[in-house]
Image (cartoon, rainbow, N blue to C red; front, side):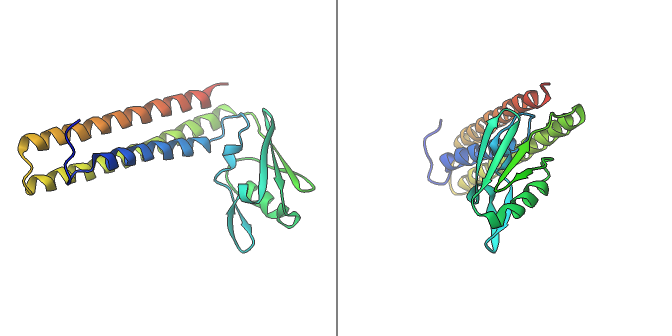
Length: 188
């Protein structure tokens, strides 16, 4: 790795590329793969107390069985709002109410739904690749700016190569995570 130059913040670029991968993993955790996981509910928000709140701030989420999630709502007045939020989330899960507990049976995924989820995973991965390429562009802009303020051509090439290597490594990791997720989705 080249010596640090005050105009080129390679650590920041690396952190931002890793952030794109972390965001992708978060997106992937919300994809339902046929096995129960409380993380599929991470994106669900509930109209509660005059604002939108994440589901995990108004309830306890448990996975008592491989194909069942339970949501224990703390406030009896919010049970219907939680039920509505889960039904309208687009996850394809229909809760069964039992007092303040909602049971969410996780149905087996059919082939068509698995293919849709695999395509969606691909879209999430492409968004992460675009984010990494945008970070690369920012880094290359920093190199060009440093070139205009006195950075030599050899040093510019060295920094450009370093940024490109980081980009290639980040995109390769995104592709690995995508492939693993698609295999997980398509397993019967």
